[in-house]
Length: 95
Image 1 (cartoon, rainbow, N blue to C red):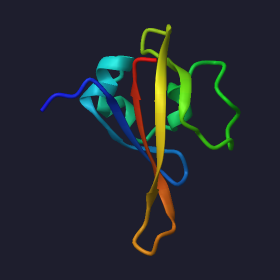
Image 2: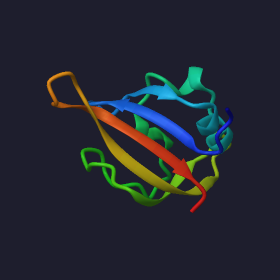
Image 3: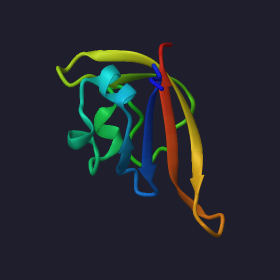
């Protein structure tokens, strides 16, 4: 099933561990370039400073060719085996 939404999984340090085909279509970055990088590298210049938790709402993403892509983000916690925070699952789509 093909989904228009981008899905990105990040670990507790903010490093991308999962990158969907929808994320590639939205940002132009293929998974092999995104996985292992800090998720903040894919936010436009007006992104909150590092250390600020990502929150659901509107945001500008950085396309591979440099332009900003407006998006609506939904950020959900990813919990580890014992219920401790292990990262986040971020979905992005049209604003």
